Picture 1 (cartoon, helix red, strand yellow):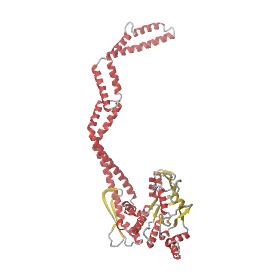
Picture 2 (cartoon, rainbow, N blue to C red):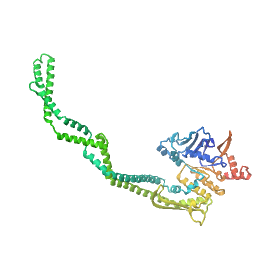
Picture 3 (tube, rainbow, N blue to C red):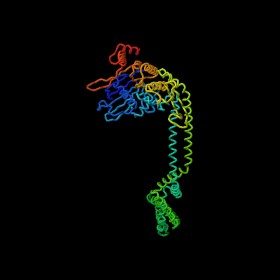
Picture 4 (cartoon, one colour):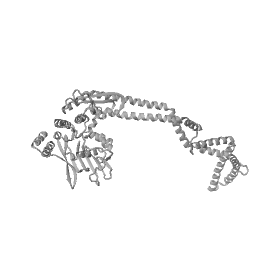
Length: 550
């Protein structure tokens, strides 16, 4: 429930703090005193957009703060889901800066306005003066029916599935367009991919090919130098091996005379072994290498193919060519497997559609079941409000169309007079009847939606006398289950409040300000007497005021 509201520097309000109690609070005051300003300030902490020129002092910021007692309303999950600090007494603050910027906080955590709106739906229902037009809203009418039918969980599931269904349908249409566009490029992409695939290049091929071409292009030089190198090693009289063996023989004769000579001998022996290995390998390599123009031509052709493909695709490496090949493969595969992809998508859509119909039929069944009870409750409330012949006819018809409210068409027909033809509320209800119908709707909604607080802004418009008293009694009944706050201009309703506040204007330092105060019992008598008979309070008006308060 709303336990406290503070408003600073807003329109005509300098600085006020209002403490609200449980039960029914009525707010009165002369026309133009600023009751709508109070409601506007509350709306700002509930997520409404701020209008320009709302600062009383344009050089100071406006701060509006609401304190809500929420321990009994199971909001811990909401706070956790949105990464907010939960407190049994939570504070919502809105700041309007002189620069025109706005900031919002929940328990000192900065939040977006849309989050305030989401929290509002869990905390308070604000009925503005012109909200009777909402009676004609199909969404509002479904809200009433579903509250009594206890469809909240099924509707939550249904809307989640519907969102997925709509997204799947959009993806399906995009997929069809993509496939159609890709089919036009299919043959060209297929040719490019086949060309790269048959070329079969791998990472490192370019470097290897270039080295092989370089080797074969210099084969005669290689052969000549390999042969001469072999001769330098193996020549019988002056070859390296012959000379090393001669050196080893000489050192062999003196190696035992000193450690140094023995070391010389070992090192020469090691070199001789290494040179002997080199001789064998030079001989093998010399015999193996041969001039092959055909092999060189094939290597050049292979390298040229690589250069041509790189030039064609405007890249400079095999790695980039392989990436292009992979992308082309995906494009070709996406068209090749198009039917499979589309079939899978259609199957998913069909599954969601079946699920929607299943949940939608359950919602519809629940609605149909409570129609007689809802019609009865509405008629009883309106009969209590002086509309003894009021009748409602609620019609629900299932369709094949999915909407946010399920698969049903809903029509609420009404007549206030016996024998008159039933029509939509918009067609047949007068202004005073609209107020009473809205109160009937709201009272049923309030009982079943379990909201902490409901705020009425002159819902009593167009009624008076005994009907006003009955409306006050309904608000009293509602206030046993929830906090009810009502701005009213009728004494019959004002007197029903467990707490009564008065909004009034004062002039301070040549400026007009709006203020509010909680009335004492004596002040309530005076206020209600003035509402009955004007500023000059008669004894009759005062007596009547006392009777209303009792």
